[in-house]
Length: 306
Image 1 (cartoon, rainbow, N blue to C red):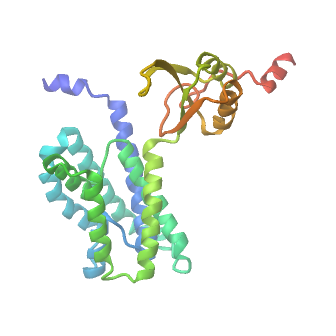
Image 2: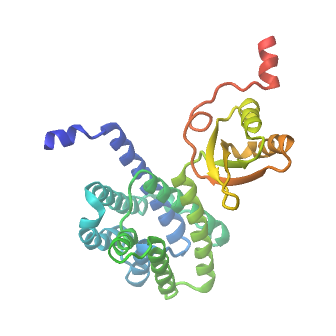
Image 3: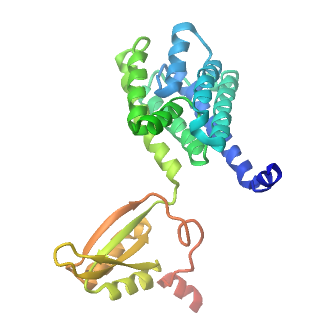
């Protein structure tokens, strides 16, 4: 059984995931040491607790990160699953090692932005958000409040978002014991940037727009979207709630820069068409994650003729 289990592991993917989690931890750790600590900015979650311990008793965050997470990882053993446990342990060790390394690298101690806390707050959010986003995207966590939130969700049915928010609020309020209001406000700016960067990094860079089109000219619209934009179109069968008549809905995913052109195509064929534009956080496939076929635009036609 053990041999079969080991053979079933995709080692190339696993090594890639661990590598990206390591890069994420190094990025997050650098931001914490070079920006947050250097410019006296707080942080939410378990990382914020380590900064509080540093401010109160000068306890090294590299060690407190590890010590605080050990009981949480043991507690969460039955909830995380085997793979989740391995990735959580690795993420915690990688972050702890990252904090230890960056506190001993000279240039990481020179990023003093006390003269402009706005830049410090933005940079803290960028480094922390990008690092955490990489860790989450490749299946890892850094333990801490993530484990607590997961346990409460499974045992008590409390959404993880609410638990994480409550923990952040408690930690940030406690951080006022060593921070003034000015630094706390820039910490909140950092938290906002952090959340946006985490979402962008975790969801992927291949964002798109989804078009849901209800029109009597659905066939013509789908054809023109395929011909002019060279994007695929799909017919979804829907039923109207009022008259209960069944009709097709055209679904098409386009790049954000193509939305205006797509709307012109639709309105040109049916000015009464109903169009709903939705966010597609990640699009995988031709034209998004690998090259699409060459478009038949005027430039390509001109090149073929010459």
